[in-house]
Amino acid sequence: MRINENTLLEGRRVVLVPYEREHVPRYHQWMTCPELQKLTASQPLTLEQEYEMQRRWREDDDNKKRWADPRVAEEDCMVGDVNLFLTDSEDPSLGEIEIMIAEPKDRGRGIGKEVARMMMCYGITRLGIHKFEAKIGKENQVSLALFQKLHFQEVSYSEAFQESTLELRIDEEHEKRLAGDRSLMEEKNYRETKAAIRPETAVHPRI
Ligand SMILES: CC(C)(COP(=O)(O)OP(=O)(O)OC[C@H]1O[C@@H](n2cnc3c(N)ncnc32)[C@H](O)[C@@H]1OP(=O)(O)O)[C@@H](O)C(=O)NCCC(=O)NCCS
Image (cartoon, rainbow, N blue to C red; front, side, top):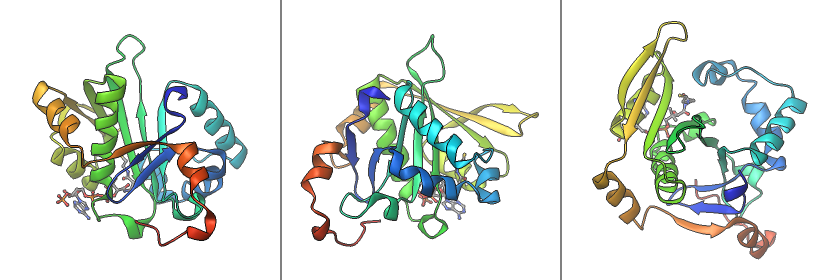
């Protein structure tokens, strides 16, 4: 998405960065895993198709981010991805959120919850989102638990896709809480931050 192509969001454990061409091979490799395909209801694509998707995501209206520690090569410390899709052209205040912690060793450590809150905070404060949706397969208990923790509620179930749609409407109280939580994240310029970090200063990934 053009609007945030230079946005870096630095949280406590993770850094969200725009999805760049150099991230594609690692992402492609993750998505060859049948378990992840099932959990995320995704079809495997060829590497060429993934490059094409990356190019399109960059240019269209979606808000896609990978995360990484900027002090080490991003491809080496990616743990997953988060997307905020603007799915309704007539309602720009609706955002569909998707999260994937691709690396099993990084699951269950609070990263999914932190990333969801960061992305929601960004969506509310920068994009004017007031309603979030998440589509979750009925067997994905962890994902259901994550979004329920965040006060999403089931609004419909599709027998055909065997997935629930969960929704969270943002009221004033939510908005104040998220927007007011300054310790949640810091917004920086991705390209400047990257340029300012010399490779030899690389330290351990924060994640
Ligand atoms: C689902 C997913 C995004 C959750 O992220 P995560 O970083 O593993 O989750 P967190 O550690 O932030 O935990 C968030 C909540 O999920 C629940 N949870 C986490 N791990 C769980 C587990 N193994 N069993 C049951 N509930 C679990 C808990 O309610 C937890 O909140 P709590 O720690 O306050 O109790 C992640 O596991 C994942 O990407 N899995 C594979 C792909 C996938 O399923 N994507 C979602 C497609 S809809």
